[in-house]
Image (cartoon, rainbow, N blue to C red):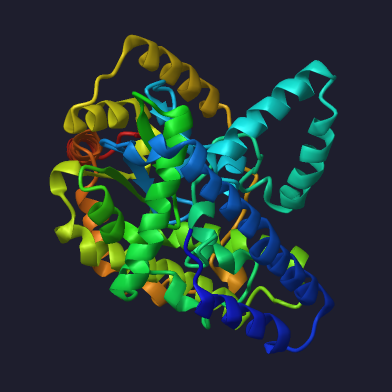
Length: 415
């Protein structure tokens, strides 16, 4: 496991001295120190024991993994849950990415079986931990025992944009947002730790299965992931930047206001979150030509909302994956269920003091790419609407001419 010391000491300095002393900020720092200096070292010890008791994990080969990427709040969670209809895919639940060790996996399985037999007393403790995330449950519900992003494997290295949820200094820590831009040694150490974690998980849960992950903070690692997994299948979801940036900014603000109430809606920190998202978009545009195009599928968010089944069938066809009847049945059930879902998350750029001018000029190439992704069905529908409009206009003109002609011939008519 890799640990970036420079970021660790920088976080301590920022939390102690930047923005003045604040009680909640100090409590957050104590929690970070607890996790960094006690919890993670314990996990590290168990990972070392894995090498002694389960050395076979090192021979695990992660073949053709599938990754869903995209800026935060781009519909990736919805799409991820649909794709999970395929039982050949395997993904870690939240606690498995927090405590990534074969021994801990097996110990947790043992504890869960005991918990069921004695009336689930440990479930109350788990619920109390999950309540820490209740403030954003209307935006993104979080549970320890549900499939989640494997971002915790990067948070442990301290090279992860997700750290900004706990350390609200996006400008000072902007270098942790794009791993591909960091020195080669750092990239290799972070990705080696990540690969070793995935091997442990697949050793326990994923033999003869395909590793499947959704990670909205991984845009800055696209080249690094391709270097470690050259056969990786990458699905990139592209949403309208205006809505995506507003939604992501709202997510950070709602989380920050419970931990750091001094951060205002229209503060410089909020502006930095929008800049981080722009940085993600720009990085994707920069590295896209260097990605293996045979293993890259770009999804337009509007197409995903209109016809998710078609998108998934196209993905399976391009990647040469087998779409089973059972998967289609489960998929259709989920699509029908999701049609009834209505998000309670309300947001806009204006409420955070953001303007479309902030990113429209900088992201012009991205908007051009998005327009190209309009599917043929949408284009045909638009052309059809235009034809109908023109036809209606012609009919109105003809009717108007007939009326004028009738009036000329019958000047004393009442009509």
